[in-house]
Amino acid sequence: MTRFAFLILTIAAVLGARDASALNVFACEPEWGSLAHELGGDAVSVDVGTTALQDVHVIEAKPSLIAKVRKADVVVCTGADLEIGWLPQLIKQAGNPKVASGPGYFLASDQITTLEKPSKLDRSEGDIHPQGNPHFQLDPYRVLAIAQALDARLAQLDPAHAATYQQRLADFSTRWEAAIKRWEAKAAPLKGRKVVVHHISWVYLLKWLGLEQIGALEPKPGVPPTSAHLASLIELTKAAPAFAILRAAYQDSKPGDWLSEQTGVPAVTLPFTVGGDEQAKDLFGLYDSTIDKLLAVAK
Ligand SMILES: [Zn+2]
Image (cartoon, rainbow, N blue to C red; front, side, top):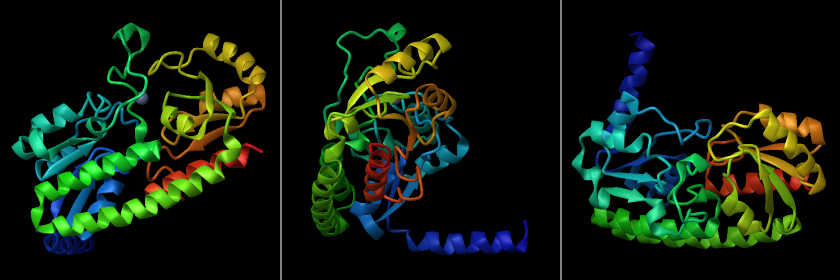
């Protein structure tokens, strides 16, 4: 180890020690890490398991993640089976009873209703989301409901800071509700416009803002686009017409770019979660960036 690396580790240890009394939160996705920060401030220490550039449907249960879950007081995840391929494995390997069940196991999906819940489960139909669509971080009303539930959970786990959580929730709610009004006014010109999507990542956003999804590059959720499917999408995209082809920061840009070249409809990369672009530094920036990027191509 170099002296510099040692120095960094020492500083990290000292800074870490200062947080000894903080509630350790493990967030599966950046949006919930950001929300935990909003609600907990200095009362919480947050580890985020994934980044905006990763596909959270498929994450490897690496030792570094297991170590984070091992020291967590609470795991905060999307749920609705989004993390079915890795979260149960992380919890099992971590052997930390605090987060295996009970109050230390918080799923955002338990606090809200999901859209697109299939009435009949058939995995051959590409139902990779049998509990409904889990990509609800872009519905600000659901985020607010989740914030209220998460805040109550943090206070339950850490009663010494109950007043802090209560005050911070009130502050967050005020700012969030004001932002919703601002976003809705700003995005009003998008109402009724049509989009093509890569994965079914935008259902909540589109419903909220009154946009319409006319097609998806993935013929079935989780199934990569085939050239035959892409060919049929060309006509659909032109005829609608769609004003944008949407993809998340982590998704392969090639299929969308190809469709864009064939149709002249711009492909737009949206952050999808916190950290997905420069502007999406927190939940507020995530929504600001998403709406700005849609408006930029909606002219
Ligand atoms: Zn999905």
